[in-house]
Amino acid sequence: CIAGFFAGVLTYEAYLRVKNSPPSRPVLAAAEVLIVIVVVAFVTMAGTGPMSFAAPVLFALVVWVFAFEAGPASRILSTAPVQALGTWSYSIYMIALFVGEITTYAMRFADRLLPSASFTVQIQHGAESHFGVDFGSSLVNDAVLIAFVALVVALSAVTYRLIEEPARKLFNRWADQFTEAQRVRSNVSTKSI
Image (cartoon, rainbow, N blue to C red):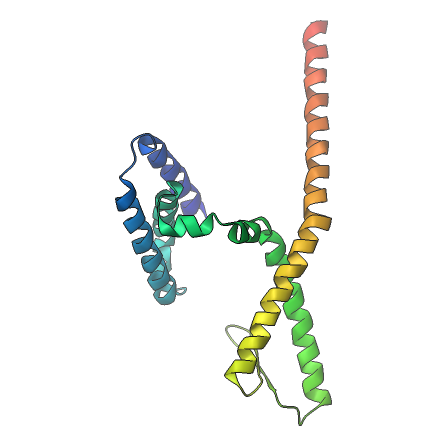
């Protein structure tokens, strides 16, 4: 965590030093493609082993490359659907666990209630807990996964609009009121001296 913070600070400083004279667009575009390939390879191989300690350095490089927004990946990331997913990302994070837990309980219940059903529920305990449902067909499994993701995203858009955004605005109003009260108190204290 601390390594990530300091890597972020250093990355920002490195960006500031070259932002007015960045590398050429073709170089940055190639760097974006290359860094995406490296990240996919790294995440696939690193796991939680010693290699994972290189993550802050790698992701600092990712941030630096994408800060220039010059390549094909940046163009994709700046589209409206991807921007919406970014806006809803905290809600997605929170809702995915909630929907996953409800799905887990529903599938366990259905598995007990309908032992001859056309799906199997697998729960693995040990170093890592794992829940899986197999409907016997990869096509059906994929369709269920797509439906799950669509449900999570749809619910997240709603919770963002009805909960997260109003709560953030309320907190910002409180913070502004607190800041204004502190400023007034400071002015009154200064004038009375």
